[in-house]
Length: 184
Image (cartoon, rainbow, N blue to C red):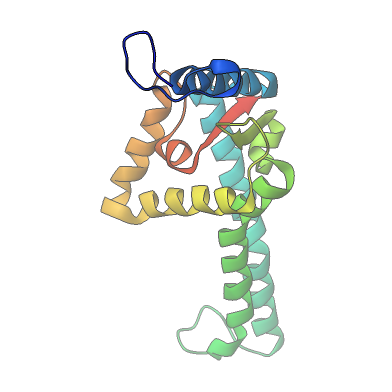
């Protein structure tokens, strides 16, 4: 359709322009996020991370201690180099890896937050819709966070976490995965 100046414009329902539809969509997304909760501050997020690290260390200590206990049952002293068969360590290592790689994305998908965030009444949501995150977003968010942690000796992770002090209160891995953390 042509406008009053003879230019062609895309129109949506009831004659609204494409720009108006985008503005309405952004407004709706903002309202959905507001209904889901207020943005979580950086210090609450940091405290949640500390709680999660303690929980993760506790959860990973169990299989490691059990593996050491199994080795002692079979007469191997874990303190002596090369005294125990490596096969006894494999279950503990595998369980530890599953806990490490699954803790954040699985908790985020199942409950909308990790135990640290749950304790502080925080939730991870889709930034655009305000809905719970999908499994793909949950894993993507975690993998980006892990990538930042191992890249450039963790400097990217520091930059990622400092980004939370910006006006939206979102880290780089939040922005890249289309998520945000809110207080409920």
